Image (tube, rainbow, N blue to C red; front, side):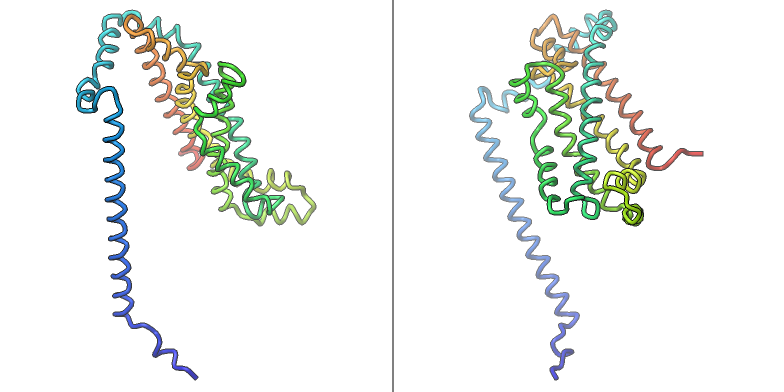
Length: 289
């Protein structure tokens, strides 16, 4: 019978192998870092050479446009409250786009997450398919989807809502599926033993366990979607972003409107961030005594 103890490596050999592995990782990491820096430098030089003006000339004027906006806003400070009231309906439209997209995306994401989680999926063989759908949905930027939908449906809030909802479904579906991995399967097994269908098992056995986390992630995504809906306004998708684009495109004489839009958008994002943060804290940690 072979002596197994003789073949076992000593502590010194293990330490030496580990040190050699660490050195190799550092060398590979250094090589990759050097390649990354070289590629970044080459790309920067290429982009700088193709620009109408070089970066060295342009960075000195980087604050010229903000200075013009602030100067005109200061001159017309008395008009800012009225401008903010004027653009408030556009802000409501932006919030509606973000809210509807978050709601639809969260519902689709929840469905995709349940269909792609082992132990919960009704069709286990199709789990890779549903996961690839989520990957594709969140891999394509909202602005690309919005541009295609604007070409098909025309400008307005509907293409923006659909584009954000598609991206939200993929992003939340991934987060929801990770939450589902920590769910206890005992309630599902108990419901299955008494003849409950798949929808009943999910509604009664899974949703009560993951509901607070689902809502918390959805609120966080709502904050992101407000910013996304404002950005999509620049491509004709409506909302406050469309008004901001028009104000900036007209140039001097309309910078007070741009400043008013910046102010109400900033205040809205801050308020929504604070409120959603409070709600997420209550959902995850419960009400404080």
